[in-house]
Image 1: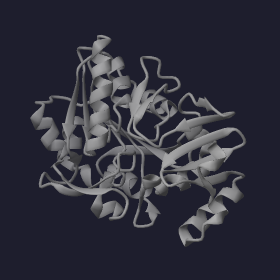
Image 2: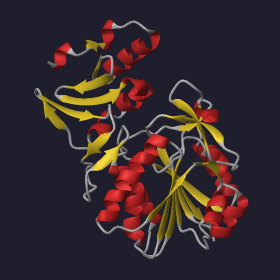
Image 3: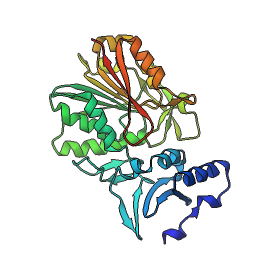
Length: 309
């Protein structure tokens, strides 16, 4: 029985667990814990995440509908469970091509729709998907730019890379366009970095997120200029940037003044503060107009940047 598998988080006493217990009560949810997973519950609705991803409980408690509504739940003992505790295939809502292999928590397609609305992609465009996670956004971009276009997916986390490979393989079997995968962290240099591999959306440089979240690995790093050189790019139409704080380091004057792409960025908390103002200021200094828009379903904004000329 489900009720025999876990304890209420209220029964535990560590300071961080107490904080989650207090937050769950404040938002009208319950949290239960087993040796392998947390269940966040609202009546019969359940989001399950692995215990190694405990630091995502804040996001799930604050944006339950966003993550619960991202995929089709499964029925078990009267519960409707969205199970992100192990890598696996899910039916991602509003993504109708095939079931998607997720390393862990889903990025709801509603966010991808906001990217597409801003990008205004056309047949033949060139897209850089920085922080491609499981590859769904890359596939959505490829659908818009067609076989005459190009999508380059950049991802450093090895678990996420394996998910991209599975999903891109499925896409290719449906006759989809080729998506190029760069197995590296987009960064300010090509010297390599220490990287926190979490098999989740928040994997990032140790310099940004610190240790204690994922497995520390040494990852290759690559600059935007090096990507352009590697693929002999003569133009870049659009950049989607979701790189967990690295957005403060990667944009340089030579690349942006050469290619002038439209850019959408999901900003992150760096050194205790959301970096949307800092990254917007950086882009404005490089002759971009910037606007922060509300990201559907969550509190984080999106920074939309358009070249002035």
